[in-house]
Image 1 (spheres, rainbow, N blue to C red):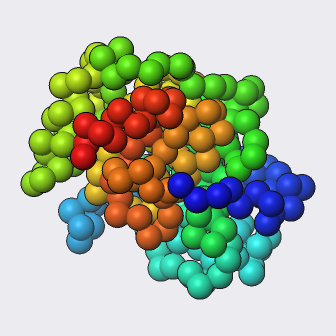
Image 2: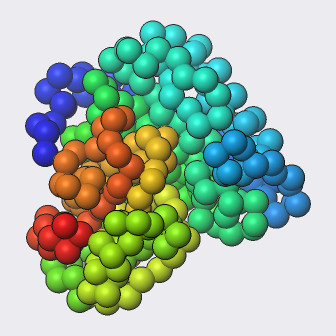
Length: 266
């Protein structure tokens, strides 16, 4: 795993960025909340994933505010073209992570905002617009839920661990038996939590999260939240997650548990 970048960053500036991200996510929450379970239409994109007008409206606002406050930063988002990906600081946006859940009236969705520095995540926010829950983390800081510090559960054995996955359908080909080994070893599994599952891991309710085929806007915000709560989050090889990672995610509540999960996956 790479050394922290916190020594290269101004802690005061990092707190400013985090406060900005939290406020921005919360300012956009009424848009998603007012449309939730209102029968909003969706269309299928070329990659066969759904998108709604809410996704697009929220991302437009996120981009507009970032361009006003930090025009020197880049932006990588799910719904619109990327800007300035050669810059040191890049905001990574998923206006509605879990569009399928949102469109079908389930709560397993949230707005994700991350900031990366030299391709590594340094802060992340998960905001659930309906429940009003906001997880926030930044490098060198304790993760919070609605402003209160939270921490992972100390579970060190896989047979005692709760495993969360977005969907078993994400595990295909050679990934399928790897996922099946880990699930068979766990105490029990839950599905469909999406980004919220990683917030629950940070809060000590889930012990392992496993996913595959994710894009940077799906996972960058999750990393500082998991790590700031005392957890570990890497790819399936144990490498730190960056904008260039392959989209295979493993998050655990303890290093011992993480190492055992990696052994099963590999």
